[in-house]
Length: 108
Image (cartoon, rainbow, N blue to C red; front, side, top):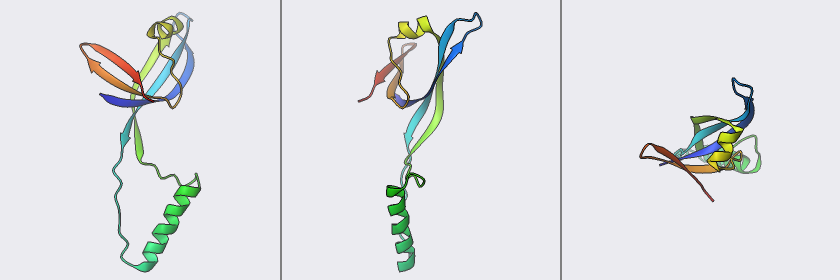
């Protein structure tokens, strides 16, 4: 089992001109945080200021997740409806691969 996030959904046409969707799923993984203990008081102040900036300003993201492209689905509208999953961008799914099948489970 692994977790994926819907990264992008695009409208496409297949070779026959039928409308469909291109759904890009990226793998979600936690990156372990490394705690660096500053040696000097000045370095500790700088570290504290940077951590405060990461929390307050979106231009300094404190990102602990890393995404890797995992699955790209090309589905006609009929195939998409048959799948019975409403994909939304940034929605996370748990994927299970077993017995020659792929199972999607939406996380809360």
